[in-house]
Image (cartoon, rainbow, N blue to C red):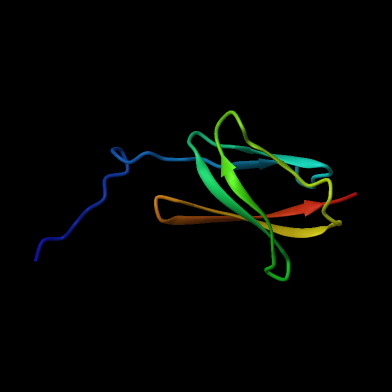
Length: 88
């Protein structure tokens, strides 16, 4: 049986940065490649979803009430989740 080793030097890495946090009317997601995302409220209800690109990376939150939300994305089968606080 052959053991498969993953070489991180040959895999594309995506660093995800979310700011400002807390957010008011929007938050920005800095990414290096296109990804789909979901934004869930603290109870797990989907409140927004879409596709982000390195140049189209602003998520508008103007119509959402203040609270804690979960920004969720998956890149190369690796989940990334971050809490985003919306403060009005």
